[in-house]
Length: 296
Image (cartoon, rainbow, N blue to C red):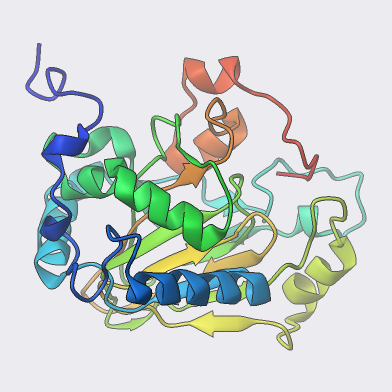
């Protein structure tokens, strides 16, 4: 048995010291009586209600970011560039659709993922992800619950990596929301762009999506230039989004601890293949239709 195989699949609460990755004086997420915590939660809720995105600058401590960056660089040989030609729904092209249908809009994706199953046994990203205090805090900020750690074995808490000239095209997420921690900025570029709530659970709004994709319509596009250590909460199921091309010798590295409202679901097989390079047995066993019935 390898060292990694002998490790527990999740850290116990007693093994996680919040001070390893958060300045609890500045961000007292553990103290439910703290006025500062209440203000932080309220601010996130208001931002998410307004446009589906909340941003907490400098949330993860510099020492933790240094450790995560070192881990990501050690694991960089495992970074995999997945399917290069993708549409926003990560599905195959249907040539029977009109040419301007957004399901026929394909771009080249050159970004990569260090899949969750490659994380080191003592990974600080794993500790952040496994912290019950973090789960509770994220749920309160989202004003949604209960939420669960994702059963997805490949994408539950990966690192996304973009080197010089890489691009992460417009897409929708398969899960309800994503938590992002910027571990390392690219020298230039690498801005996060999104169109808030361009679709709803009962309306794809393909015409609105087409105007962004085919016509370059930017009147509703918002841009967030994340900085190292920033935390972002984002409802990417309903807001189309992308990361602009990165430039320079320093890679853009972002950690993606992801939580869900359904503890059973994982990525659908085509999402797993498109993002993480393979589909496992669990992806086929749990390939259930989503409640919203949206195109993935």
